[in-house]
Image (cartoon, rainbow, N blue to C red; front, side):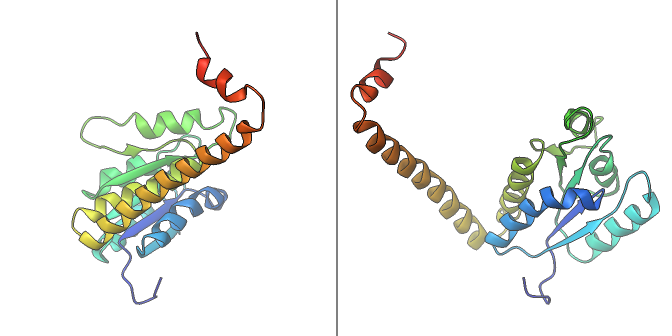
Length: 184
């Protein structure tokens, strides 16, 4: 991204250990040409900084917050309590409960403080970037066109994988027939 571009998305995370997962959000935003800012802040260890950071980012033009956190994972909820902008939560994997605690903390928000919650880990971080792009595309036709192209490319990749599988199975006697008769 050009350093002159104002970030439209803020990627916040509770710890530097979350960066290896949240990089997936940045990759998706980059692929759609969306400027973003990435910062570390903590709902528990730096609550004043979190409030100030959200206010600063919002006044700087941020339209969507993508927030990753693990364990108690209150960061997305705290951000959602501060801003009227959309907040997308990404629960981090790991810990003694393998991210289930982070998932519950992110998805179980009280009425009036919504957080759109993604899957645990890297897939959730990737989807958060796509969802942020979809939100921004409501006001940006060019971005909407890039999203349509992205979805078409996903479809083509599945068709290509299916063609490869069919070609591999064709050499295996009866394999295709066995796959199509399965369950009869």
